[in-house]
Image 1 (cartoon, rainbow over the protein chains, first blue to last red):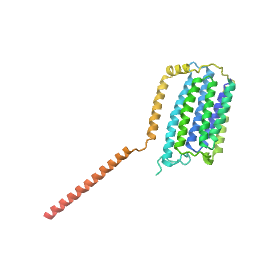
Image 2: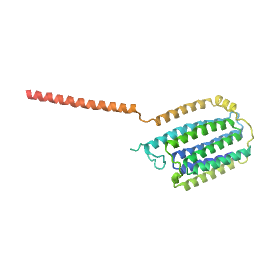
Image 3: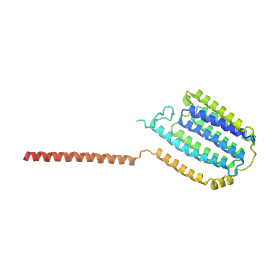
Image 4: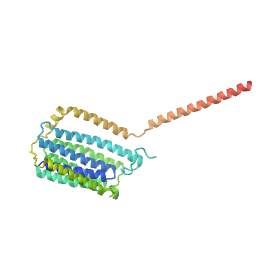
Length: 103
Length: 200
């Protein structure tokens, strides 16, 4: 298989994530787009691991680590989104201009 | 192998487009399941079975469920929303397209002629040995990071509970009592002074 195929797929997924982060309004959909971008990075890592036939499995180990970090990120991100919703009554990234709780 | 990869990749791209363009938030979250599952299929086609299984386990099993719970807790509407994407979405699309062209051109120029030989080196035993021998220090650091994320999420989602309110009330009551005591003392002193003046 040409190496270019997984790399181009990763490029497309990453740019879909970029579009989602820039264009989406709900904070949870922004987080979902971030997950797409992290998946593109994982695809790159695994593809280069298969290309180099790495004895230390560097790419696959890094992919597993990135998945773990993504889990931590989405946990904290959703906690922040819920805090925003509790304080302001919405999860809209355009209207969330301050971090203090609305009185 | 390449047929499977291309099929899974096309599915991932279609599902990813629907994730970022769907007008229903819950549908977007469910399309995310399809996209992440298809990426797991790509990992499998690249002979990385362990990463594919972890992807399904963690992403589809945990992260998407977490996202769906967050959607329920923020009372996300299930009907199609017109204003789910902002007005500047054409600008966002142009940024994404330009970035895709730049990255794609760079990737093609750099790795256009390289090939991947199908070597099955992604079994759980291989990755497990690598994690617990070569990469054991980053692995331990990652456990600390997960603990920090756990504590952070707990602290963020903690409401000011009744005990905290009781504490503040107790402090306020103490302050009120102090003030009252001061006033009482003042009046007593004033009275005593008055009496002394009267005697004089």
